[in-house]
Image 1 (spheres, protein in one colour):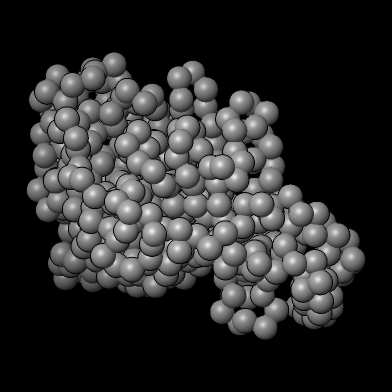
Image 2: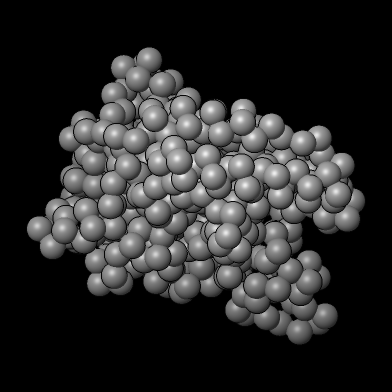
Length: 431
Ligand code: IMP
């Protein structure tokens, strides 16, 4: 059974990240030629299990685990070359080959520099910054630099030693002054920065390509493309719970600019949702359960960050937020993940609306001030006692679990085609 129609597919998170996109992308790589990352950077963390081996990637697309698939890091990504090389070396050491034969990086991708990480760290630590709860990977400052233009370094600069030297020399001097004045950060030695990044550039030069053209040509030739979203719609810099968001366009809308392909390239938009909600870092979370239920979900779902190991905040499924994200991302199908985590609960709840200052709100408003004040309106459904992790056919799920899935589908208005009941490749039930 094929869960989605033929065509190119974007896999996108519809909550606050960590929905299990990696596993769904891995499933799709069986029948695809290209896997493309289009947003974010080393703040993302995708975990996949292949056989008995567990892997976590931050920058590498999940297609590296499938021989014959070409992986693309698009121009919309902010790339930390040291993290990428560590990831490549780590996988090569475990026998997963990553080379220019299966990985290409856009020459237009922007580079995360050490001063971006220092700024992220210092701003988060300072009271004045307000604190977003970032991953401190330098993501916000790197995207700000891109928009600022003058000091930014792109992949094509990283592999051009003369240009890199000039840019690093100028920018480090300026950043040292700014970081000292604003946060009393000790200065960086521009020469050390240059030499470190030059060496990364030398190792990465063979991977650099015009990936936008590669993808446009591939689509024209009928190749199958999968766009691997990172983070999720509610963390999107424009459409998420601003300012508690990441700095990229990480809904599906970012794929066109972030991969450099035109809109008609993609036909299927698969929204990934957990059977409950989680969020890491600050920001409003109306259905949060800071109690026994939240702890139950956290422990059973191993809800600790892949990138930072921070405990995730956990709560009930929020159908108001889900409808908003599904509409925004044009979700044609949904893959529901981690249904097994909810087993054993007497009852499960779904948020079907909000009340704000006594007034019912049926549609999401991505305004953190309002969201911090809303009260969720819940519907309660019967839970299912038995474990479901070993089930391999949707029909064999307990009736209560199927009723729960159908209810989420009706509330979102998008067909749920896949249901995850465990981390293994085989623990995906098609519907
Ligand atoms: P930044 O992306 O490091 O700037 O962090 C901004 C916000 O996005 C913080 O609340 C992070 O916890 C959150 N965030 C960024 N990437 C991810 C992700 O892949 N999963 C979950 N949360 C994320």
